[in-house]
Image (cartoon, rainbow, N blue to C red; front, side, top):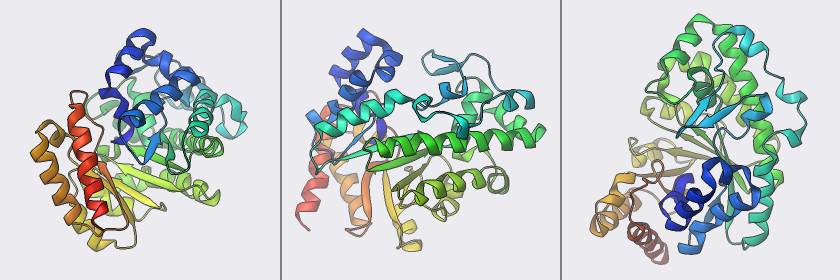
Length: 322
């Protein structure tokens, strides 16, 4: 269900109404409770840490609020802005979103050994998109202009964010996360040649650093089908793709790689028959091993709870036939 499985639950909405999103994300006990809520309703194979994609940025002195998405108080727009950010390798580990690691320790203590705990972080480009633009907007034009106008500063920004993410994800693994997922939600912002030159080196260094620490890595890209093979060549154990990618064709090209995905989240709005039909079609297009069934992006807020149960039942029925 990706990382937003709790958003469709009435009990989560009640907590959010009482504490606000920021209040939930910044309180370890509340964040742990939200992480566990989906597993109390559905027999999922993993709990996904409840946190905000912006959670590590306060360690760099970045101030932001939610309205409803993240809004940066002072966006990064010039080379001196980048130079003013602290070096992530000089930070005390306790300064990088300690509430997330604290929540994970609580969750890990409550999960049985058969249920995995997954951590996550935004990829350097995705975090940079918010930092430069100031908030989420269509196609992030200021970010793209910044990359062309200030290429050295753009490179320095992604370098800092990549090293920050590495330390953040390593702390999550130390706190009990069995694997970590790197979300490149805005992977497709640049043409392929520009992505290779400006973005790929930083993403690769992040993944290599995690691999050197023996942290299992899931890499997810969104809305960038032209880059799927490039992402598949990066060092990771699992590649997650959105619903725009032909997963069966990708499996034939890369039989060595574990794949994650990629049911269209809108299928869950189409009724139980559609959910069973599309889940079955997805499963028939892939071998029985080397695949993690997942939505191709986050579950939509209006998704009926019954649809989630139907999907879980359909996947488990297929597994029992193995």
